[in-house]
Each structure stands twice: as structure tokens, then as C-alpha cells.
Image (cartoon, rainbow, N blue to C red; front, top):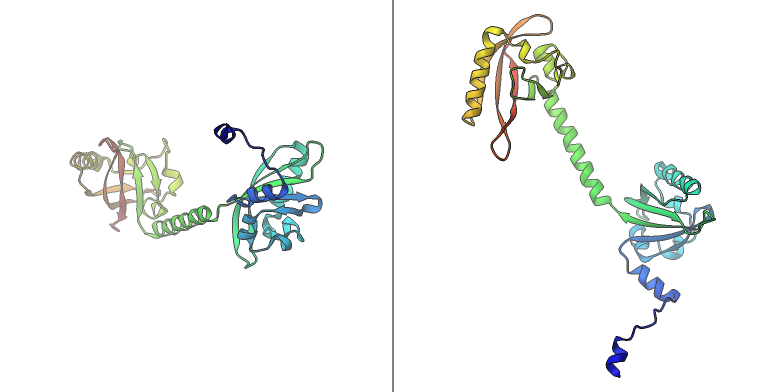
Length: 259
């Protein structure tokens, strides 16, 4: 009999105290918002995120915790829910008691079918991910600024006679007289067509030999720039290979020798 009692399903205790305990155990914020965007319920994770106690939070509206620039995001979500009755996923910044900004992903929806309020919402703190993205973007901008500031043409091209460009730095204009966008993926105008016909064959031969030997190349040859001026350049580069050794293209840097 004792064994039977052990396996017998127990009644679920859904008292307010038990529900509070359950919601407070979650690692995501849970909110209930009534009309005028007044906070009606917050769980423990909210107090951890904002540094405001439940008592303090329930005296305030949700927008008072949202960064001023993001309040329109919240208002638009509420308007969309009122019209469509669908849940909405938004990103916004929450201000803590210490005036720190935390990026949050919020899913919000109406709790009743025929009324907009109350609304329920869950928040996940995504600040670490957003900061990592911001660091990567800042590094990318810094690298672009460095590359584009070099008075030379840094490039990545397909391995064909046209040397079809997939990437060119801003230094392209100083070397060729053309802006980078004019030479990238343009069948009507290619870097290969700028190379002096007397030098083009030797350029192709040396690059292919370097690619075959997985070696770097350094070649001096003549080009005709956008203004019809003939100039001598130095091209330093190497092949680009896939994991299985297939040739994906070439990359390098081209300097104007001033000759």
C-alpha cells in the first residue's frame, strides 16, 4: 500500500505562494502590466536585473525603466498587439537603479482575448551578446579605417584573366583612378583590362606559378589608369585556397611606383 501511495499522482498546489516560488525560480524576467503601462507583477529576476525591489517596481510604470530612445519601440509593440492580438518580440534597453543599461529581448502579449490589458511579458538579458557584437563591429570599423587609409590597393580577386574583383580598398582610386565600386564585379570594366597587353601574359604566368607552388608572388607591370595615364605598379599577393586545396582566388596589395 505504501508503494502504491508513492506512485499515486499528488495534487498540484497552485496557490499564489507556490506560483510566486515557481516564477521566482526562473532565470528570465516575468512581468504583468496593466493599463497605463503600470507594473502589476514582477518576479525575483526583475529585481536582480534592475536593482529595484518588487515594492519599488510596482509603484512605477514599465516605460520609466526603459531607455527614452526605446520607449517608442515599446509603444509600437503595444499598438500592434491591440490591432493584431499576436505576441511581439522586441529588443530594448532597460535602465537599472545604478543607471546601467541592459539590453533585453522581450516577448509581450495580451493575457485576455477581448481586452488589451493586462499584458504579460518575459525578458531575457542579452547584454553580453550585444556587447560582443558591438566590439566586433567596432573592430571591423577600425580595421576598415586602417585598410582604407593605406595609400595602396588592397584586393581580393577571382583567378581569371579579368582579375574580377570581389573586394577592393579605397586606395584603388589612387592607384587606378577608379573608385572601388567601379571595379568590383563589373563585367564592362575589369582590372585585367587595365594591364598593359605586353605585360598581361607574364602577369598571368607568374601568378599561376605561385598559386601552383602555394607561394607568394611579387610582380612589377604596367597599367593604364582611368585618365589614360600609363603607370608602373608592384603587385604583392598570394593564392586563396579552400580546405581541400582548391583555388578560390588571389589576394594582395598593389602599389603605385610613381613611374
